[in-house]
Length: 364
Ligand SMILES: C[S@@+](CC[C@H](N)C(=O)[O-])C[C@H]1O[C@@H](n2cnc3c(N)ncnc32)[C@H](O)[C@@H]1O
Image (cartoon, rainbow, N blue to C red):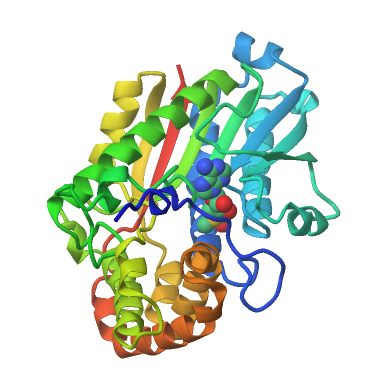
């Protein structure tokens, strides 16, 4: 049987609009993480952004920032205001208050993202000019040397596609009966890792072209410590619960087992070592800071069954309904919620390790 159609499983935007299942209402985890990153971004901009640098300063009268994989608000607006505030402080601390530039923010996501909701909810009193840029961040999205600062939070873990081997019945990496790699055989993890390295390499090439020399790239990505086995991570426990919900439904004939076999999430959580290796191989950025953070307020979200399910639904309803049909979604998440409550102590016990990696890179 050919699975060629299924190898095309692609990331889908988060739930749009602002109803009870929207990303807007169900992204508290990401919001808490962005807030916790504010202090680190402040420090990095204060110490590393060289606003006096001739090349940097002469590139334009406006300071241009992009948020890649912005989804809908409010998180992207909070992140952008944090960056702008930090840049303004930097100018002030250098005695350059009179030279504080105008700011322009580009909100990027895939073209099927709900940009209407994003635009409608833009803060009326914002300290920047806003523009939307549709398209995949695995490719160049902006003119050469046109950006000063790029931010991407909770987005780079999305792969451009599910690795082909994972859905090939004849490959040792065929991921039968599983939907992710964290608790899967090693070959599956290797195929995912290779896809991630390729995608991030393309991402870095594009960003290096778009940024002015000395420009900064800040990434907040889901990750876990080098020394932890992937199957012991909070993410693994979380995705196993989604997987076992799907398998239960297949056993009861509510969905087909073959559909579960051919479904894989196009996502990857890299360790700091993997990220360092990819960035160094790319060679166009200097790593200024790489650090874990694990905001307690954010982690709590995933230890409460209902909130966890709502976050999963806001993030994965699109991709799941595309593959399994929208008619199963209510039942799927009803079961998922029960399962997360049942396993809440297991979720809590796997949640104390760092889950978010903050990276500040500077364009060489
Ligand atoms: C979890 S949301 C993060 C939103 C926001 N940055 C935050 O931190 O709350 C991830 C976003 O990345 C977007 N995304 C995934 N792959 C992408 C790609 N190749 N190009 C652009 N956006 C992408 C998704 O559509 C989604 O809106």
